[in-house]
Structure formats: structure tokens, C-alpha cells
Amino acid sequence: MQEHDVSLAGVFDDLVRVETRLYNAVNERLRARHGLFASQFEFLHHLRDHPRSRVGDLATRFAVGVGATSKGIDRLEARGLVRRVPNPEDRRSSLLELTAAGAAVVSDAERTFDEVLEELVGTAVSASRREQLATTLAALRSRLERANAGTPAG
Picture 1 (cartoon, rainbow, N blue to C red):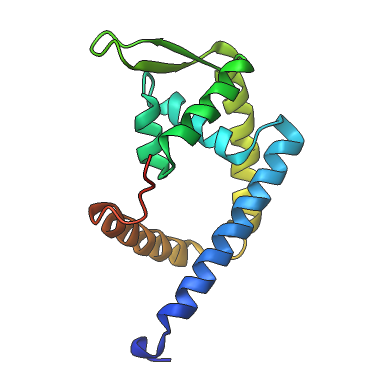
Picture 2 (picture 1 turned 90 degrees about the horizontal axis):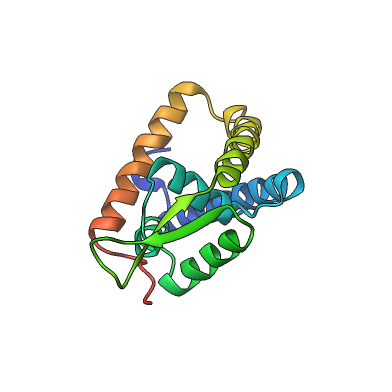
């Protein structure tokens, strides 16, 4: 098949269905083993790697509304996995930190996350194709982010 024969609608359909099924599979395994939703794991993972982020930083990173992000952090805070600390540069906002329990949970859950990805993606996509896929998806994501496309309001 020549490159121009590829339907963008077909690419969209495949991309969305792959994302949905993969996200659901990750979500199911994380919930069963660690009592975490995939979105909660993503927040914890990000906070581990980017300590003292703000709610707005997570909302931007994950293209989710600030209100939904704040509610997600509220749930993690209620479980003792995250804490809000005063932001010394802006008293109107808080910085987010993992607690020791949050760090332990994300470390355990990361093994499960990696296992699911290897099982579902690693066995289906060769290393050379994975590199090509990663490059293509990174370029598409970068383009969408530069265009501020798909950014939720609020």
C-alpha cells in the first residue's frame, strides 16, 4: 500500500481504539493489584518524577481540566498518597508531593504497568517498529501540543 492510500479516518479509528483498549487493560490490572485507577497511577508517577508540581501542571501534562485534576488529587490526598504544601512563590497555589506511602505505591504499581505494556505492546510490536511508532506518536503529540489542540477549558 502506498503512503497516500492510508485513510486518516482509519488511522484515527485505530489510534483511538488502541488507546482505549490499552488504557482499559492498564486500568483493570492496576485496580486489581494496587487499588489505583490508571489516571491515579499517572498522577503519582508524574509527581515522583516531577516533585512539587502544581495541579495546573498535571492538568496541562495530561490534557485534563483543572477541576478534574484537583478532584483526582483530593482522592489521592485522602488516601494519604499525596500532600499539598504551600507554594512559597504563590500563596494562591499549592505544590504537590508524594508521601512515603505514595512513593511505595507508585513503585509497586510501576512494575505492574510495565508488565501490562510488555504483554500487550511489547509482544505485538517489534523493537524496530516500536522505535518508529514512538517517533511518529511523539511528532503527532508535539504538533497537537504546539497547536494547543484538544486542551480542555477549565
